[in-house]
Image (tube, rainbow, N blue to C red; front, side, top):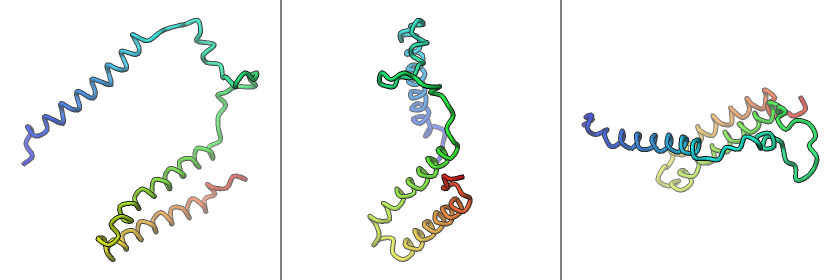
Length: 123
């Protein structure tokens, strides 16, 4: 049964975790070193002794971030194939069609991204 007393351990764990995070953030802020003199030196870019040319905080192309996000998306998809590969006999034909549906959805998404030109670097 779902009664409120069953959620007490979860609430306690959440409070302990939140308290640890809050104490860690506050502790590093108050106990950490504060050297205002070297703040400008810290913000400079360092290129192994080579003189700095330009600003290190120049914006990147959106294509770079889009490619990175798409890579992560299609790379994480592979993780979902491991349970199927390990239990291929237990899943049977029904599992095969479920994985085939999963692959089809991602293939359609890949074709959509390709047709929209998200993978073309020349544009």
